[in-house]
Amino acid sequence: MKKRKLGKLEVSEIGFGCMSISANYGPPADKAQGIKVIRTAYEKGVTFFDTAEVYGPYTNEELVGEALAPFRDKIAIATKFGFEIEGPTGLNSRPEHIKKVVENSLSRLRTDRIDLYYQHRVDPSVPIEEVAGAIKDLIKDGKVLHFGLSEASAKTIRKAHAVQPVTAVQTEYSLMERDPEKNGVLDACEALEIGFVPWSPIGMGYLTGKIDVRTTLDAQTDLRSGFDRFSTENLAANMPIVVLLRQVAEREKATPAQVALAWLMAQKPFIVPIPGTRNLDHLNENLGASNVQLSASDLNDIETAFAKIKVHGGRMNEMQMQIVDQTK
Image (cartoon, rainbow, N blue to C red; front, side, top):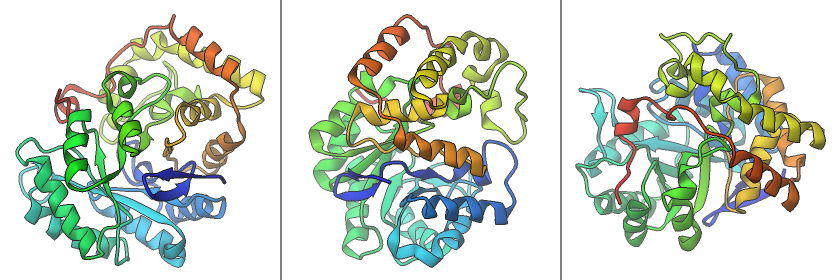
């Protein structure tokens, strides 16, 4: 597996998003299965694993800690802070809260340092400079090695970076979700030499071509059931995007998911997608995207075709979009 740089942090060009093993896309997987998938990803060259305290909550960090303990020094672990989990739920990025919860994450992850520590969502009640200052202290103490932001606006990224250099920004980005190209976030990352980590790089599974109007999502355990894009109407209306990916995949002797990932990696050299799965076949398929090289004319063809397609439905529900930082 080839490597890429997120700021100064070198990682495999495809990372592994661990969330869906434990939460949010259906009931949690069996622990042994989760460990096996994570360790297989490592054996196949993945050195970048992404989790968060709120996944589960807590159970995903515990799983990641156990799975990666045997080769801790050969990989980079990213986790996230920023939610109030114990009290009334909401955002909490107060410096004293960050310094308390980092200890709990370190313990669950069975490690003495977090390679990349993201603010999970920007907390409008705490100046970003204070958050960056708290991380700067943790870096000084050796508990955190790099600072990241998730779903932050370009303005917030610049303010934070002035206090403590930001290594990576994480936001939803895929062939069908193009906001980072329009809102200045990708441009800010390029200008400041910050890495970019797209979450849901395969459109929360939609771009695999394995989800359609017959797919049923459990409202109790699967967040996607409440998202606009996963309504029956929009699953049908967005099918031209899957058709486009299938056409390219056929030409490239690849799968739609592999083309979606290869497309992302071809956008910028500092982009490291983090597809997630609990399924070994899907893992192998995702990592196979490394072997798909889209030419300039392939990329141009995709762009020309995509420009004629309308994406139906917002990317998350209204409540979740309210905590996405869109500061201008």
